[in-house]
Structure formats: C-alpha cells, structure tokens
Image (cartoon, rainbow, N blue to C red; front, side):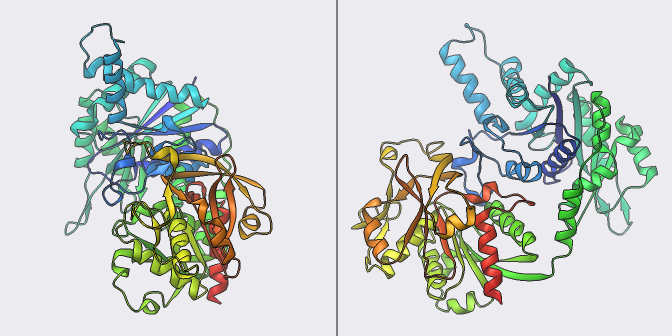
Length: 534
C-alpha cells in the first residue's frame, strides 16, 4: 500500500511548493523507493490546454496525452519518471466527473454536495494514483494558498485522508514564508503562525514546515515556531534562497527531511545515492563558457510559457560545459524590424518553439529565413517546423503564397493543413494530437545521427500537419524528410543537409529532456551552436 505526502502552501503563492515536492520525491527515490507525483489545481478549467500561455505559462504534456500544469515538467525533470493522467487534477475535472455521474444517475437520487461527493472524487484521484503507479510513496502538491476559497474542497479531502489513514501512512508538509523586515533587520514568524493556525482550523495538522527565507533561521526561532505551530523543532526545515535550483534537494537532505518522513512511515532508512546529483551541481556551478541562443516566440513576455524549452537548452549546455544565455525575441515586434543583423548580432543559434494563432507568425518566418541564409544553427519545434516548411516553400521553392490553413484558410498552396480527422472537431479542449507517437528515422540524416536508432517515441501537441502533396517539390529543392509516422503517413522531422545545422520537428522534444540526460535534438543543437561560436 502506498504512503502519501501532501505539500500545501501558506502566506503567499510562489514559494516553490512544486520544487519542494520534487526535491522530496528525488530524495526518497535516491534511497531506493518508487515515487509518483501529482498536482491538484483549483481552477475550474478541465485542463490548461485552452488557457493563454501568457496567463498560465507552459502547457506540459504527458506521454499518455494529458495536458497539464507546468509543475509536472519540474516533477519529471527532477525525478526522471514519466507521469500520466492521474498526475494533474483540476477542480474542473472533479466537478465534471461528479456532474457526469449525477446526470447518469449514479447517485441514485441523492442530493449531490461538496461533502461528500466532491471530496470523495478528490480522494479517489489520490488513491487511484497510488494504486495504478505501484509507488511506495505518492507526493501530492495542493495548488494555491491556505485560505483560498477555491482550494477548500481539496484541503477538506486531504483532511479526510489524514483522518482515514493516520500518521503511519500520511505526511503533511506546509510551505510558508518567513519575511525579512528591512530597517529592523528581523525575520518574522507571525505570518507562518497564522498560516498554520488557518490550516489547523481546517482540521489539518502539518507534520513539517518548510520555511522560505533569505537565510537560515536561528535555533531560537525554530523553537518558537515549534511551540506555536505544534511541530517538532527538528521538522522545521529552512528553504533559503539559492543561486542554483539543483542545490535545493541537497539542502533538504542535509536537514534530513527524507529521514523524518521515512521514520513516520515506519520505512527503512536506506543509504541515499546522490552522487549523480552532486556532480550535476558541480557542473552547473563551474560552467566555463557562454553562448547566446535566440528564442523567437509570441509569448516571450512570460518566460514560463517556454520553461521546458529553456530548461532543455540549459541541460544541453551542462553537457557541453557552456552557460546558455537566452536572447528573448518577440516575434510580433520582429515583423517590423528591418535590421535583423542587429537583433541577432551575438546569436550562435536560433530556436522557434511551439504556439497557436496567426499573431507574430511572419516575424518567426523572418527569423527562420535569417538562420537559413546566414548558416546559423537552427532548431524548430512544432509550430517552428511548420513555419520552416512555409519559409522554404516561399523563398526557395518559389511558392510565394505558401501558408498554413491555420493562418489563411483559402491560400492556394497550403503546405500545412488541418488533419483529416480534425476537420469535424468542434470542441477546442483535449482534441489536439496529444502524447506519444512513434516516428521512424531515415538513415544517413542528422536526425538519425542525433538519436542513433531507427524508431523513437515523442510527445505531441498540435492540430495541423505537413501537407504530403508538397513532398516532391520541397525534396527537389533540397529539403529532407528525415522522420515520419508510418502508421498515419505524417511528416515528423525535416532538415536541410546543405546547412550547417538546420532541423525541425513536429513534436515537443523539450518534454523529455532531463538535467543529467539532455534530449538528443537539444544536445546536437547546442553542440552545433558552440561550434558556430568558434
């Protein structure tokens, strides 16, 4: 039977609950325990798939096609485990499930209420994660902050789990802020005391406090927190600001948070293997060179919209001992820019990531053309591949009106078109081509050299595809179609062999990159960009 760790937040949002949950999972995994993670989000959307990336950040996609919160990207990158549909639960999913059951008559005429019907559905999602994952420990992050109206049903559900399972099977971690008051030069514990009181008023007793502060709290302060919050002093963990995010698990390890959890669960405290993580930290702290990569996108005002792409670039940089600096280029502004040489003057590689809609498209196409004509290493992801095809068709093949029917439904040369099975789709949410699909690679190509195998599995999130009617004309002008999904006869990867390094894919490789295992396409791209810098 699985054990359950719940991570809640108080005082303010943005304290790093996701990183705390990921760090705990990493430490438990380092001791040989199988872990699984999930996130409860209190918004009413069924999933973040229809939400604006500028408001919500990146939509992360699991291998089984679930569109999730970006925190799942942190989870997967830290613990190097593939998560699934049970890992991201929203209020929308919970209420939709309950309402569907009510309409179906499953409640036999009972009055459907938040307690017990909504809370039971939430508990079922927690237990389902434990049962289907076969994990020793399931770590669940509760989105939002204690006191938020929208998250109260989740807190009530996990209170019931604490009551049903007891302390031998549950552990509650509460993340709070210890603010520093300038002038008096003091750290203040009162906000944490109030937050814990609010949590206890909801019936939840925290087993440990993770206190975010600019520096370590004193023993006296911990004793004060222990007394007022009714938490053992050794269970009060400092979460200080760090230069390198990968230091956080080691910081928690040194304070023995994983041992505290295992003791409460009655599980063996096995020896931790963190050598690989310490090696990563040493690498990140001692990068000797720097290169600039230009990321050309339409959501650049919120960097979290591309967080997996940025992390993947950094992962490849670690392998090649370079610090990757991102030059954020707003594609909409680039449409009016005349001097591209000035925009990309220090750039050693250009990447165009995914996106939806026509805004800023021509700016991305200009960047792709500049990369192609100036032999700058280029990597296109999803939309970045589609625009690479459009740019090549227009400027090399002479199809001046080449476009995607997403942007121009009546263009004469739709080199990118809607998939046949998508033309009758009415609902926008959850209807894209999502999750893992197989791709067969062509030998003697850059893609094959990168992956070093014939078949790969990659995660997708898109609706439009390359139009196979244009394969011949593009091949005649030098484009190589190096990866295809043979089952559906869909193009997955294109490249230009005469170029220094030009490759683009229809899928999202950034979702499978890890700090200690960079994705092959990002690895190859940074290697080429580093060589270009010389």
